[in-house]
Image (cartoon, rainbow, N blue to C red; front, side, top):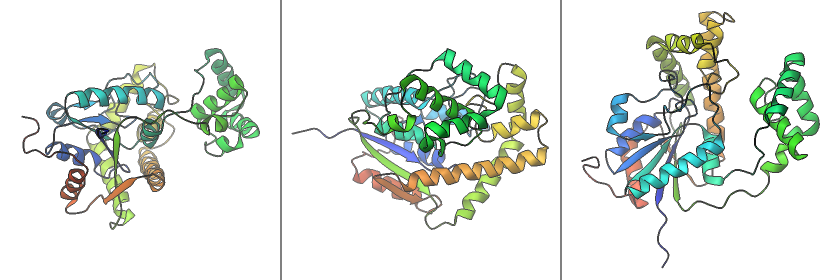
Length: 322
């Protein structure tokens, strides 16, 4: 008789939906460890704007793939998949349940569905593309991409330098567009049972989520977000083309520090960008297979999720961390 695959919990949802709080509360009821799935929380020195849980919480419940990388070092979905699988296996070997928590939906997708085989970065080609962009701007490169790969170009904004560069690089190295490679068969399924849970506005109006986003960003500002970004800004070796600095909130504060906008404009643009992020996250979730959704402000949320997990074989215990 084939043994049952080990359970891995994936707790998803838009920004400001309460994923971290729920994950920590869940950890009080069964032996578990948390794996971060937020592309900003991986970086050191980016605590306030990324919404990292406090050190006190991280000492109480083990967290992985958080606060381990310098902001100048790019990190991609393929690296996340490799690191997350290693963490999952280590947690399972300790007899605990992995809880993956975050809103970087691409990371969740690549973890569960694999990634098409794409070529490694080519430094010489990247420098040539960057020189082209310096002369004519990234919009010109986006236009060039559209000529050879309209499917990919339609998914990328004209100012998204990182993704434009990568798509052009893949097309030149392989002779085939990125859209071709992304349509190819991916990695074999992992030997885990992924329980996909999403916290979304089900009965709660989406306007409530928008208000929470506003209040959350205001709290970040009050807690010293500008000072946090200023420390990164003053290092001198970072810029706003890096994935870390392009994170929502950080990018707008960075532009404010560069004198490109006023404080009020920064505040307005950061809120708008965060709401757009939440919209994209919800779009991902609407298309997600085998997803169980809960209203993010349901009064019996914790009890409902625990009941769901219990039905799927998660053994609840009164004192999991003792």
